[in-house]
Image (tube, rainbow, N blue to C red; front, side):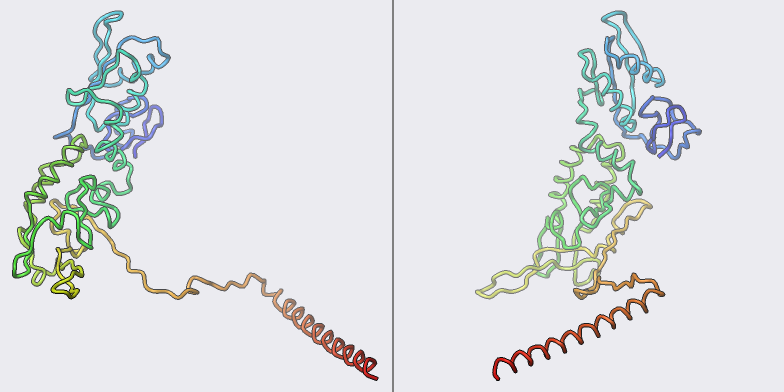
Length: 324
């Protein structure tokens, strides 16, 4: 993250304005490579005059934005700004100031929108991505169960090492070759692409090119990057292991990713450990204290032995007087 040189607020990578004060990002804010805006949605916020204590602050923020315009007078006065959705933090902060006013309105690509459109779905995920330690890896999945070749984990189509999900969209032929049903896969992708279309880095073209790059058919007998996914089913009155789908060798699946970035999904194999493997004996005594401890233990041991001898003698004496 960068730091605003005007108010000190944190700024996400790719932002052009400070999310708190609206000050344009410059070299003094330690700006880095900006986000490409080839398919980035545009957000329009409009509001009128208000007696709210937030009004002055809202206007001050808007005046820092080059697209700011002011028209009309009195009740017809309108303050308006346009911002790319990549400035989502600034948009949210500004809308929180003016969003409850009757005169305010927010449009995304010309359609009425609410704060929910900025905090959920693809845009909400984009905000998390910008704060991630490795933003690009975030989209391809930082964990095994999120691993995907599409470049978007919100599409709901991970490529799990155990198979299943969209990998089951297809059929086997008689020779054991798996044939993907790409029509079904594309249908499911289109549904989630539409749901997350406001994400500024979601590349629909790239996703569909990835689908085209997938092989039409897979023969796990010959392709070492794939294996059969099996299950036990009843066959002629007997249970047998039969192939029900395919599963990938997860570390070799990067070859289907388009572009120079190759995500990595590490699989840690935990070795078996004994129940006491985690127990570590630590001597908390200082070296010069150890002899004293040993001496004390010996003295206590001797004292215990003497007590036992006197107890036995006492019992013998008692028995002697009882049976005289």
